[in-house]
Figure: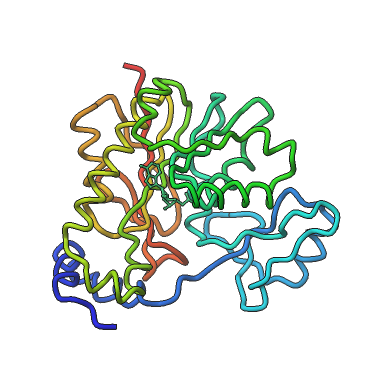
Length: 297
Ligand SMILES: C[S@@+](CC[C@H](N)C(=O)[O-])C[C@H]1O[C@@H](n2cnc3c(N)ncnc32)[C@H](O)[C@@H]1O
């Protein structure tokens, strides 16, 4: 793959020597894991566990196994009809386990399709907690709804409401409403970008800058719809610094009233406002993650 000079220069300017190991890691196929569906019965889970290779998770993720070609077709549980496993990046699954949900009732997954983080979050909610799973793009929302139907038993689907508005609008529709919000924002996603000759050949620094405007709009919408004391988890699968600390810094400067929360997780590399999980060192990624708490004043 011919990588345009301006792409190289843009990333090397920030990552310096690290870019020499980061770029080759981004060019490798993403390592995938499969998560056994926790909502199928134990006997079926035990039967499948025998034929899967455990993913020895540095973060203690349960029910995670290594993906292999033989798992391309995802089988269904013969009793419930639910799909048996969900394929994802290990860090992507980890992110859904990081948002604190021990207090509060209403949670929001602002950029939800295809639903990996919604599925990870719903596993952790108790009977009196609810999740609004939002995806504005019509066809992606259909995919989200299909995934929820295929992975969750009907009684659990009742805890999730799916909606389709632009994330920034939550400031108006749900002011100070949610106890926790996950924003897995649209981003440069260099791992995918580097696989697309078409997109790479048209890439300019503007591409990342335009995304930063959108990411900030989502972050500030989330901030306004978060209750004081609530948590906001912002993530992107990008190594463009402006899409990580850059947008969080802007939020902090404009809104204040936020504190950065510490995450003590293996392979996390701290930045000023969050952490990177980078594929030249971690068994997945890239991801930038920032967990913020809205202070009570
Ligand atoms: C990185 S993907 C989310 C992946 C998902 N969280 C998962 O784990 O399966 C980002 C999503 O944000 C959606 N999106 C784009 N613009 C948005 C907006 N203005 N508000 C909310 N979501 C948006 C995209 O359609 C896309 O589905």
